[in-house]
Image (cartoon, rainbow, N blue to C red; front, top):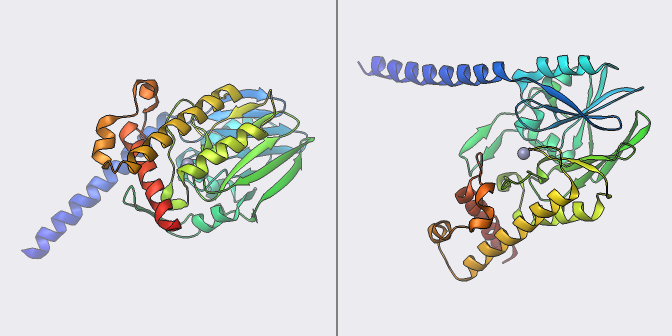
Length: 305
Ligand SMILES: [Zn+2]
């Protein structure tokens, strides 16, 4: 009797799991990879997940980020459409699955390069306390082969492609990639255009570090560069400046509330004001953004005590 009941429970759990896998697969079935030229050698690919950048030229193809595994074949077809193959390098802006999911596919033939903390997190199980989730390591073919601490340059397609690590922002392994000849930069998830960002505190990100990284970008992206964000459309320095203004103001507001000993519920009830109303779209709504700031600031202050 007991065994039967457990079998029903397990059966139900498996069925639910399979249903959610099937739902996800159906979702990816409908996704189309769109290719748009940005400037110089650089193209911008969208599908589902983080923005992809591709350098195409006489030396071949180089790709920054590769979205989710079920999209690998479609991304490969889009690369074929661009021509000048094969794909020689894959760079990862950070370890999250919506940017590295297809690594195991492309890593079989191309060289994957990323910050050392990206390799560290892709090779070990990751626990996300905030979202109560555990993420399995990637299969070995998806692991970065070349890693670096601060920066690395790839001289490819007639320009320097400079990869620079910025500390403790979205995660502890963020890199931004400057295409020096094409005047394009891919900044990964250090920029969500006109949206509250996700700061992954469980992966070493902090809101103060995130703001400092965005300010570093404002000081180091030359005028006239096209900026590919992690999520959202290709943007300009003016868009990034607006994002910095939102970060400074909302982080400052939560810091003030904490000094006044407000509870998280009180902060959420007060809200961030009409100015940022449209920014809470997707999975980081206003309440989640307030909670992320509060948790990050609280953990930082307990670290320095
Ligand atoms: Zn991310």
